[in-house]
Picture 1 (cartoon, rainbow, N blue to C red):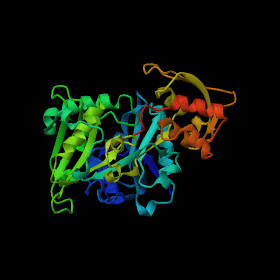
Picture 2 (tube, one colour):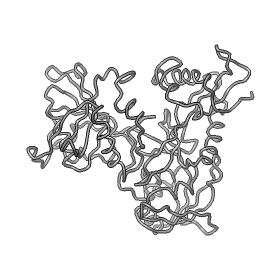
Picture 3 (cartoon, one colour):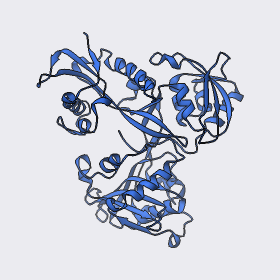
Length: 419
């Protein structure tokens, strides 16, 4: 069957909404005007259409949907463009025909031409996207703790900074500024536009309506706070006779440990709350180190974003590095993005205002790995030592040690925002 692979036009975006509704069981809402359709521009899509079939409005029938947001993310302290892939779905009658592979292959080429050297997504099923070269680029650490169990170690709670509660509107610019400072040296965090803040982080409608009003806790002086927590508070969510309320933390950022402790101490003061739930904390979040009984956090890690290196030399040049040095990387055959295959000479700089230099090389590589393994190394999710132990990276001991020094990240990779 001959399919037409192209961006959708405005009149076809309702089909993308319906595809997302069916493929993801209503996660994006139902109907043609759900968030998948309303939050995506036609020019961000790349879909497969069956020209021999039509939908109810007479438009060519969409067989597979695909879109990619033009994001900017942090890469060990530096900003770089990323294609945020979303709303991938195929009508059941068109599955198992290789449509996603055809779209993904073309999308990678177009992303490379458009300067997006990295692609990311939230994998509905890992098996689907690993075959396209994606690998995990962070985990979400989840907590669920009773306020009665929030006891801070070695903390003089009387001298913690003051926390004040606000509605989001008046403090939006303040928390956006804290967030920018918080993510500056990190990896994986999105540069949030105002729409992402209002619709996702602070949203109170649609899928967020059941959680009730959104509040912002500012820690420190109101005119110069050192951290914030975005959260909701609702009764009847916890099966506890005395503490039936639940606090859900949506977003939390801190600029020093006193601010971080102050926010937890603030939540501990909610005597009717039987559960403080935070589903998307970073892997290196310090809560377990400051709690008297860390097991009462009921910590659970779940997979989060997955990354794919679209253009290896460009991505390597844009990333931040722990120190200056040189390394030759041999990338094995990349069938979907063959321009990545080969040996690349990397000259890093520890200066955040200076690009690394990358060029093709005919010399023997110091390390050899697949494009998938490179994504894990690039994000900081996996070290060279780990990859070598798993048989996913070939190098001698000196090269492994050098690779880990160069690719070390200041923080664990993390993206709290689902897209």
